[in-house]
Length: 166
Image 1 (cartoon, rainbow, N blue to C red):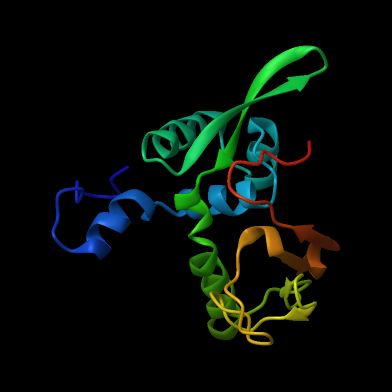
Image 2 (cartoon, helix red, strand yellow; image 1 turned 90 degrees about the horizontal axis):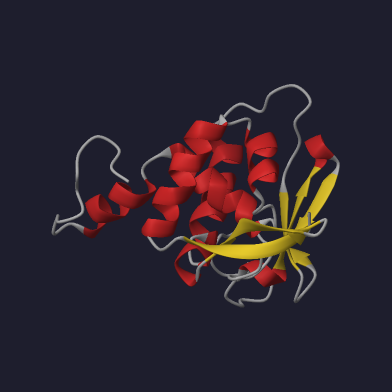
């Protein structure tokens, strides 16, 4: 999914990564899927993205190996949602570092609040994206909870392959 140019054949791994991840919607979709919001309607509503844009991004993310389609029952009707692949789950440290960077280097809007990233294994807040600053364990989605005071939410993340709750 090129941002401006096709960098998929570049020798530089950063350019190749940006070829896949360089569109801001991609990381926001991965964030929501890791929060268990892999149903199309949930993604659309939570992100405030048009159906056409979301549909194109989801298709490209499946093609890029970031998401897999997962069937689920919706009132007797089979529908498809999206779950993270291992490749997408490995972006957790990137998402968490972006959150930490955003809190340090951007102005917090009125009504905002500190987003705590809780490592459920040890029960402590981490101040690092990849390794828990309290216990030193490598952080994985299924052991993380993000506390978002502006939404009054405490969201447990889900592992790769899991669609999550409706």
